[in-house]
Image (cartoon, rainbow, N blue to C red; front, side, top):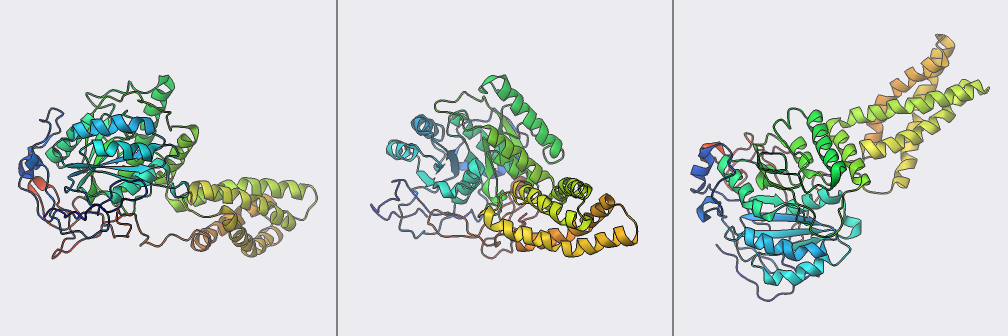
Amino acid sequence: MTPTSTGDLPDDLTGLLRGPVLPQPRTPPDGLAGAAAAGGARADLPLPLPADAIPDLDLDPPTTAHRLVPVAPRLSVVVPTRNEAHNIEPLLRRLDEALRGLAGEVIFVDDSDDGTPEAIARVRPTVSLPVRVHHRAPRDRVGGLGGAVSEGFALCAAPYAVIIDGDLQHPPETIPALLAAALHDAADVVIGSRYAPGGSASGLAGTTRHLVSTGSNLLCRLAFPRRLRGVSDVMSGFFLVRVAAVDRAGLRPDGYKILLELLATAGPLRIREVGYAFAERHAGASNASMSEGVRFVRRLFSLRVPRPARFALVGASGTVPNLFGTAVLHHLGLHYLAAAILATQVAIAWNFAGCELLVWDRLAGSRLRRYPAFAIINNLDLVVRLPLLALLVGRWGFGVGTATLLSLAAAVIIRYLVVERLVYRRRPAGSPTPTPSGTAGPSRAFRSGRARGGSRPGGLSWPAGVPGEEATDAAT
């Protein structure tokens, strides 16, 4: 059923189209039978795709006060933008041409402070694609570019989503090939790769950028050798995802490499690659920076090392200022118990900085408000440490340094449990995600081989959770 128009109702403040999140198909389309059974990725699939090769959506009549997407989209193109006003017109025109006949939509998630929203509003009436925008105010720009992509996923109305940068370094003309590979091989993720056959990284500016790109790819594959086996371009920002395979509510990326986050945290995924030529930036300045590089390394560390282990590492590093401070103060004539108390204050500040950067690094709110509680809890462990320290030194004859180290080891487990529960309380599991209508809706993840529901020919799992079927929540 085709959505009915609500007439000339006012748009949002940017003048751009908004529409409802549409449901997934309830029965597999017949046109996918041949595509799913064919096997083997090929870059020479006929393009554009025939209309019957892409699934249709079974729509219920939506109710919304906004203007509606006129056609049920089969492909959502998510474009995270930051100050890309000069790239909007050529990008939309090339997308309009590349997606002709594919019933696509474009979703801009905009973190710009320039005229990007106005540029989108100006060009939108001149293209045939439905265009939507989600502008994030400065206070809402959580997670950088990866956070923008995550919010774009929540707005997708199609069964497939493509992530593409707004600077035209990713060619829109390759999008049909990504979709063709997904349908042909029943893939959950299709990566546009600069390093796959037919790909090129010539658009990277200078030798340094080439070294950073190849080095980052190598670092990621070393961190996740099994999950990333066969993936040639982990750092790619150009890829297609089957939306039902992604836990949209649980995806919490930080920085600009959301593909790494998706591949490292999702369940088993069927992955394919399509080579493409990475072009030079069309206009504007690159958003890559040293701070983004530091954020990437920090996030890679967080993905690879479990939180309790990170806390233990931070606590272990805190023994250095604690031991050093205790030794110096005791050497200056201070009683070893008083020296331990003062050195603990230095170690507390050290550990708090480490927890904020490496353990609970994406928690919103004021650090100044968290520090007093953190300091009080860490000082309370002196109630355990000081008697143990006195026992080790006075009764059993341990040296001050050795006794301090043993008392710190005994306190670290208790400290982790208390700090996690009182200082860094997790956000409730049902926290809302943005939807086009402004209401919160639940999102369910389905891992390949884990979700219960219908099946497509060739082994492609069909999304579960439709009326009359029992769904298995496989959220990570």
